[in-house]
Length: 359
Image 1 (cartoon, helix red, strand yellow):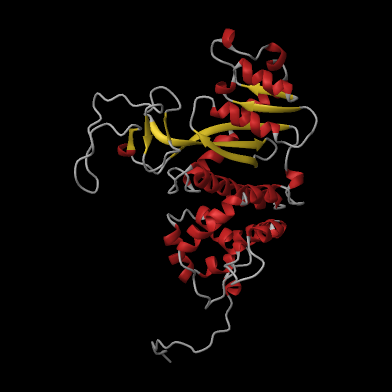
Image 2 (image 1 turned 120 degrees about the vertical axis):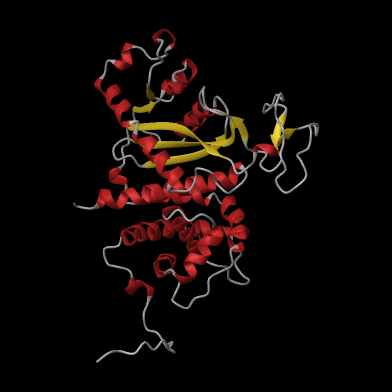
C-alpha cells in the first residue's frame, strides 16, 4: 500500500539530540575531553560571575560553541547561530535540547571581555594537555617552537599617518587611495581600525601586510601544542616570545628546543642555555654567523629535532585554514590572541582521540 505524503507536525517529540549522533562519531571523543577540561575550569568561571542576580548563559556552552566554530570552519558567529538553530549535532555538542532557544549573537560580544579578563582560553588549553589521559602522550624533554603571521582584519587603506596628514580616500563606502610614492612605516603610520596590527613581512620577496604574529610551543613526542601566544609583529617577536614560553615551563631537567634559522642568534642561544635548554636551532647558511657549532650538531638528537620540527608547520596550517585564523575577524591583540589560543586547543582536540585510539 502506498503511503500518503502528509506533512503534519507532531505535538510532542521524545527524541533527544544525543540519540541522533552516531555512537562512533568523532565528536563524542572530543566532547569527553572538552567536558573534563571545562570541569577543571569551574572555579575559574565562578570567579568571573556574580554570586546573585539573573543567571547567564553558561560559559561552558559558549566555549563549546566557539570550539565548533573552529572545528567546522564556520565563517562567523552569526552563521554559527544559524547552524545551531537547525543542526542537531551542534545542539548535542553544546548541550542544548531539541526545543531550547538559540541565544542572540551579541551574547559572544558581551561575554568575550569577561572570558578574556579571566584568561580562559589559555586556561582551557592548559586543562586539555594536563588531562590524565593526555599527560602520558606529552614529551617532557623535547620541544619545538615557531611563529607565523596572522593577517589582521584591517584594510591597508586604514594605515594612515599618526599625525593625521595624508590625502583622504575618495568618497564612497570603499573609496580608492593612491599610495604611490608614499613611504609608510610602523613608526609614522598606524591602522585606524586595528591599532595593534603592524605592517610586516616575514621574508624578502613577500608583500608587507597588516598582521599579528602567532607563536606555538609544541612537544615532539606526538606533536601536541603545549603553549600558544600572540604578539605584535616585529623582527624580534619570535625569539622574545619563545624565551618567555620556555621560561614559563614547569621546572624540569635538561630539555631541547628545535627551531628554524631565525632563532640562530647569539643572544637567543645564550638565553636558552642559561635556562637549561639545549637549543637545537637550524644553522645559518653561512656557518661563521651561526651561534651553533659542532658541540651541538654532532649529536644524533640534533638531526631528530630538525626533522620533527616540521610538525609545527602542519599545526600552523590546520589552525590557519581549518581553525579560521588565516584572516581573523577580530581586532586587537587580545581578541585575536583569544581566538588563536582556542584554535590551538581545537587542534589538540582533533589529534588526541587518534592518539588514544587502540587502533
